[in-house]
Length: 126
Image (cartoon, rainbow, N blue to C red; front, side):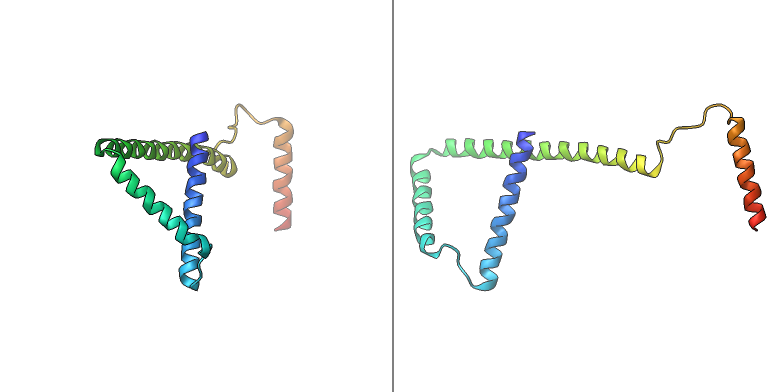
């Protein structure tokens, strides 16, 4: 369950990131303009360190692990969606009456007389 929450939170943050970027581009605005240049320089320096210091095999192994984690996260989300689908199906079935109690045996004499009285009232109104 924790994995699903983390995945949903990460996905929401990703959508927020793209939304802010769209807002910046459409309005010609830049958030945190004074810090943007320093953050870009830091990211470029870290990329150079990664390329220079980390062997190719380690990068490929890291990429494989990240792909595996993403795959597991998607499978977890799919499992959660299936559980939710089953619960919603049960809810829809109970609302539409597919799971109603079936009649067993004959109807009581009192209920029969009420039904007959109701029919006579309906016939008199016509």
